[in-house]
Image (cartoon, rainbow, N blue to C red; front, side, top):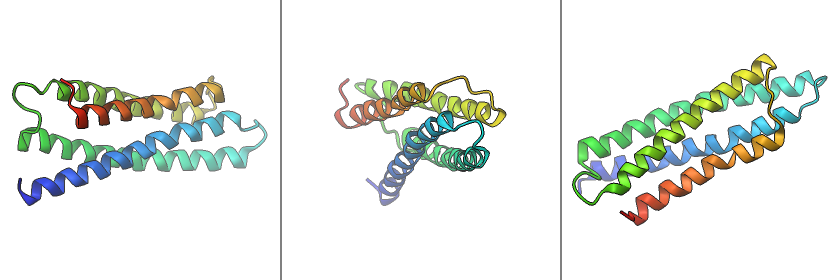
Length: 146
């Protein structure tokens, strides 16, 4: 293993964890936005500013995490060859998480337009999707069950 491989792997883990931190917190902001009273304009605007900044920051983290992961996969050859079905499952989950990230942007735009139709309870459940995906990805990478 070269030193550059270990550095890229370490940075990949850091950027993945940071991206997921944004994915964990943004729906929590949606919970709060869904609970804001219609006459509380300042609170709504403050939460929207926080959500916009977090989504933009998490998007940058996502791109760096994806680029480093592609380098590890295609450049170094991690997960290539027989017996690496775990990587296919992980990549499928990564696509799901990218979709989740995109859906977060859709929800944010709805809140910005004042067109949200979901309750704070719905967003509390929705928030758990990222947690479950993160747990499944970690298990696939560490245990490599197939």
